Length: 375
Image (tube, rainbow, N blue to C red):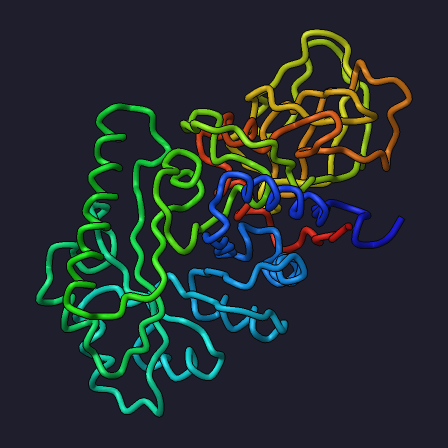
C-alpha cells in the first residue's frame, strides 16, 4: 500500500478521455474544433495533467475561469490558446500578456478602460455577447457600443462568443428561448461583419448546446463535463446520448469494523438506528474531502468487494459509516468505491441524491485526495 492510496484518492483514466473526444467528434463538423473547458481545476480532476493529455490528443484550445488558472496551465507547459472566461482586474492585464493568455471582454466599459492603458502590445481577447442570459457580455443589440469595442486599437480580437442558458431543457418555452439566443447571436455577427469589422473565431455552444443544437457551424464548441464522461444530471435534456466513459473513480479504505446490536444508533445525532444485529464499517472519507454531507441517511451506495453497501448515519468531516452486514470476508483496509465504473456508481446518482449537479460534486472534491493518473 502506498501512502497516496492509504486513505482516500481519485483515479483518472486517460484512455477514457481519448474515447470521449472521439465520441464528441462523431457529431461535430470537421471544421469545428473542441475548446476544452478546464475551469475549477478541470472540475476538480486536475487541469494541468488533463490539459497535457489533451495536448497529446491534438487539442490546443482551452478555457478557464481565472487568471491564476491560466497561469498554472502555462507554467505546466500546456501548449495552445487559453481563454479566460472570468473578469481580470485591469492592473493584472500585463500578466495576461506575459503568459500569452486570451482575455474575455465583458462589456464596453471594460474595453474602454483597456483603451486607456499603456500596454506594450495589443491585448489578445474574445468579445462576449450577451444574448439574453444577462450575466456578462455586451448586449447583442447595442451596436454603437459594440462597434467601439471592435474598433478599440488596444485589442487584438481573436474571437466572439455568447452562452446559451437553457440548452439543457426540453421545455418548449426554453427551446424557443434558446433558438432566440441563437438568432440574436447570428444577427449580431452579421451586422458587425457588414461594418467590415473582424470578429475572429465564433463559439456559442457548450456541452448541452452541442448535444441539442447541431444545425449550426461555429469555429469552436466549448466542452467541459462531457470530456469527463458524465452528464450534468439525469434530468437534463439531451437529444443525443453519446457512448461516454467516466474518467474518474473516487476510492477510500475501511478503517474500522464493529458489530452492533438491534436498536443501537450510528453516528452524530443518533439519526440512524439499526433494525437488527449489524456489521458496520467506518470508511476514511468525509465531507472535508468533498463527499456531500447532504447524503446523510439518503440510502447512498458504495462498492466493497464488488458488492453494494448502504451509507448510514450522518456524513462526518473525515469519515462515513456503511452497513456491511451482507458482505462476506470484508476486512479493515479493503477498498471502498464511492464513485466508480465496475460495477457502476455514477456521479449523476450522487448529484441527484444531493439535489445538485455533477460539476458541483466533482469540483468540490478535496485537495487532500491525491489524483492518480492512469493510462
